[in-house]
Every structure is written in C-alpha cells, then in structure tokens.
Length: 561
Image (cartoon, rainbow, N blue to C red; front, side, top):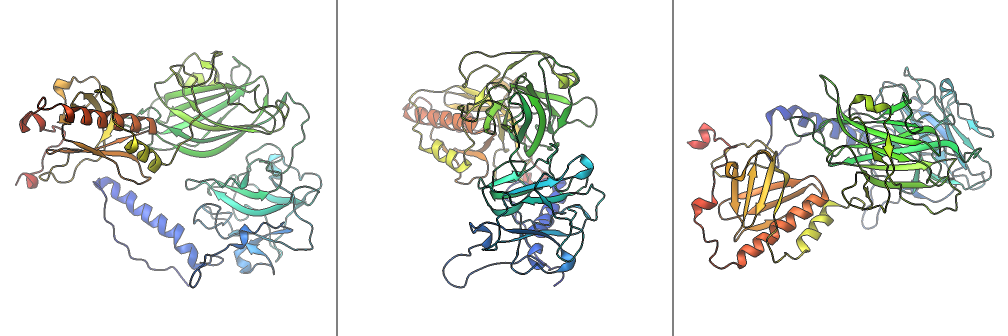
C-alpha cells in the first residue's frame, strides 16, 4: 500500500520552549511510525466488530501450543493453521524480532493442534556465548520456507536461536514479545524469558543496535530461563535482579534533573574489584524507568551492592546513592519486589525485584521483604567496587534510617488526587517548607512563560511564599500569596502530581515529584486556607499586601504595550 500520508495539528497545553520543538516533531513522527504505519503493512491487521460486542483475540485462548515457527517477511505467509504474533505484549509496536536494526524482519508464529503434544519448555541460546541446547530440546534452525531462523539474521550480532521441549509439564498457552523501547506495563499472566542456559541476558537483539527485546510466554513453569533449573547447591546459584524504576532521586544537574544509571556488584562483604554490570543511562529525569534485568552467580552469604550515579559529559560522574542487601533471606525460586531508599544521599527510592533462581532457603519457607544494610564509606567513583557495611537492627518501616523499605506500591495519580481532595482539613495552621516545581504566576499581561521552575516554598500561617532556594529568606522571596478566601484544586487525570491555588489576585500552579509530597502539601495548604477563613477580620489585608511582584517574570515589550 505504500507509506500513508497523515496530516496533524498541534495545540500546546502549556508553555513551549522553542528549543524543544524539534523533540516535539521527533515524538510525533515516532508516534505515527509506531502506531499507524504498522497497521498498513503485512502482517499487521486491524480488528473491529460491526455492531455490538468486542474483538476476542485468538492469542488469548487458553489452549496448549503445540508448534512454533519463525517466519521471514520475504515469505509473506504463515504456515496453515498458525497464528502470527503481530504486536508486542503491551503496546502498538510491531512484533518484528529485529525491530530497531537493519536485520531481516522476523516474526514468531505458533499453532494449537488439538491432537498434538503440548510445548512445555522454552529456551533462547547463543552458541557463541557458551550456550548449548538443553537436553531434550529442539532448536528451530530454519523457517518453514527453508530460510535461516537465526533471530539476529542480517545483523552483525551473534547467532541466536529459539528452542522448545515437549517433555511432561505444564503446557505453554501463549507467546508474545516484550520490547523495552517504550515504557512497559507488565502483564502478570506472562513470564519474561530473559536468561539463556549459560546465565547470560536473553535479549533477542544481543550485539546489535536493535531494541532490547525478550520472549514472553503464558503458562509453563514460569521460570526466567523458560524451563526449570536444577538446584545443585542451595548455597550458590543464579541471582536474578530486575531494576524497574526510580522515584524522587536527587537532582545533580543545574537544570534540576539528573541522568541516572546504576552499577551492580555481587560478592563477599568488603571484597574489592568485583565484576560489575551497568544499567542504561536515562536522560534528564528524577523518576527514571529502566525495566532492565541482571543475572549474577552468587552465594547466599554475598552482598548485592547498587550504586547510582549521574552521568556527566565533563568530569567525574556524580554519586546519587547506594543500596546494599544481603542475600541470605531469599527463598529459592520466589520473587521479592519492593521499594528501597537510597542511602548516603538525601532522597530517592529504587523499585527492585530479587529472585534466587536455584539457591536459597527451602521453597516452603515464608517470603519476607529484604532488610537493607546500613551503608558506610566513600561516595565517589571508587566506591563502585565495594565499601564496608553495617547491619541495621530493629523492624523494617519508615523512619530516619538509611535502610528504608517502602512497602507501599505506587498508586495511580488519579487515586492519590482523589484521596487528597477527600481528606478533611485540619483545625490548626501547618508550617511546611520544601522544594516544589512552580509555573510563573499567571497574569494576562505576560506572554510566553518559562515553564516549570524549581522553587523553595514556605508555608507559614495564612501566607505562602516562594524563593529561588532554601538559602533565601522570606523577606527576599520572589513572591507570595495570601490564603484567605483562596481555593486549592487538582485535576482528575493520571498525568502528574499538580495542584492549583487560586486567589482573587493570582493563580499558582505547582507540581511535586512524589505521592507523599503531593499529599503533604495539598493537605497543609488546604488546612491553612480553612483556618484563615475562620479567623473573622484578622487577615483583612489590602490588595497591595496580597499581590507581590514576581521578579522571575520580566514582561516582554509587546506585553507592556
């Protein structure tokens, strides 16, 4: 059909930085290529119903898969009775195994033969990395048309192949791909096959510039290997660590953000020069999302160390925090998922998953959250290779200790906003200070503003002041507003933790980084508005006392006219 021609219009929802426009156009182009163009080319298809009802995908049928094949787009057909995996598990990206590189377009297909033996195990092997086909497995070497089924075909990456087994076990009922190009919302019905038989990461685009892509399957043994791994020694085996995301990490750059990445090591306490694995760098954010996996050979007595840094183009990278965890409480084959605070820094959390695949405590042992160790030592780059640690005693929970475990899962932003609105205000003034992002105050005479700016807010009684930094006194504040007869609102979307304060003189738009900060600020301001409104005649100040000049917002010549 050729490439479709698509017209579109843009209406900014807020201020636009002229330097950001190229990124906007790149984003639009990427959206079109990922969401629309794939529907116009084989093997993509758009399903819909005429009248009532909804589309029921054949991929969701809970019946055993009996046959798997890899097809090349040059074949332009799937074997009779086979289903093509057209899109990735969560998203609109096409399920081309080599998406993002110059390799051949390959797709996964499968069928459910009612009289065939079910497939129960899977494996991804990379022979040049030391992988061998597991005993009893069949390697898919050719497509149905006789072409190569190498998953890296047409690239400079090492040859990789998909293997399967029909040994007795739980049948596999679904197949898909997970592409980490975009943020992934995981479907818990599927297991990500991200480890090869030799313990390497099973990225289907290993050694290429393509998108990081993993096979995912439904049913089966739910192992990250795709099959059960024998436990030869309960004291030593494979440790699987998933770095999911970060929250409210420290801003290390002058623009108020960081370019965070994490360095992982596993070894004995105090060991030096341990082998390390490094995550990707996420640019310009305080809430990075990785969704990356790491595999280590580990002993139960080892310590996992995670150091976070801010990537700098010039000079040494800035230290953003550390987490150290002992592995002796992990239960074999069971996953522990939790938020853990970064230590040796002022703020920040990491969302992590830990699995001792074939070592650890007996499988019938209770699963408990991991207790971080209290970190001590240098915060420079040399600390990547280990540092002394001290065990933290007492119960886990929120407090001032560096080893905080945040048990509370991250909730939808809409739900947090609804909770803040529903909470009744207090009856006494609340004093509060802290960093909050703020839009320059709305004024009909001002043209394009400068976007979100990090400000130090001081809430004191009926007055809310904002300064450039915590070092500035309230007397030198950039501006302030009186809260008597004011209102505080927040939209009902899942976008960001934003709230708006409206008075007769100003409208103040603010944004926090975390759920806890949003709830704290919203309740405190709501309370102070409530209390000041009850004080009859006490705060009847003039308009000149309410409206103060925002020195951060110079007017343009056209605005003055």
